[in-house]
Length: 273
Picture 1 (cartoon, rainbow, N blue to C red):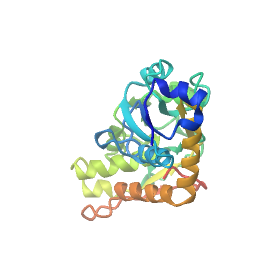
Picture 2: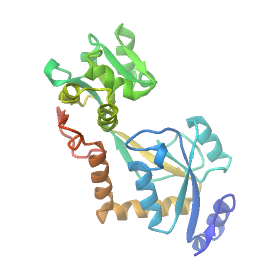
Picture 3: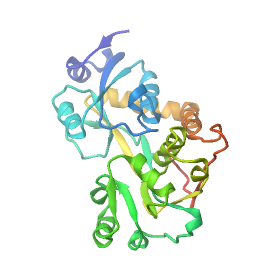
């Protein structure tokens, strides 16, 4: 097989797409977001999905961890072959994949508090802790709630949100439900939460729509190869196996006797995991 590296990749793909067989790609990733991206091991559901989908056509990926703005800049400059977690229109002159991953942000509370949270306005009178820049990310209605709520705050480290909820320092945390579950397990393993604290049942109030992300590539051919690979791993069970792998990683069932449960207030047909 021919191994091709950027900067010639885009030119060759344009002039001679039939020559592209196996490409070694540099993919920009802006954040470590377990369980989707785990920087320490270059793994996570999204990265494994990327590797497996590209491998269908023989491509490999080397991950470059950079600040978000820099991933955009280096993709434009041709120093990267692709980036993950973008929405169509965020960057020009690239080729967007099909939807690769869905995040599900929730308002997460403790079941024993019996909160009725059916809309964003129901958060106004509660002590809410969200992830950094949530006020600008989650829409106008959420932004208005943050201004009207004197008890609203944001945390740069999302594991802190988990501590605050489980130790009753917050009424509600706003974050992706799978990120919450991952950090809950980590907090228990590291001894930051007691067994009693870890056994509390958390409720995921789905007051936000799922956030769909695509991947962006400089080469149309590589984008097409990724889409084909994504379709194949979805149909042949590989993606289901990856999802199950990370479900097991997030489970507390084998950690002493602690077994937290996240109860979804309402069910969606498709979940990130």
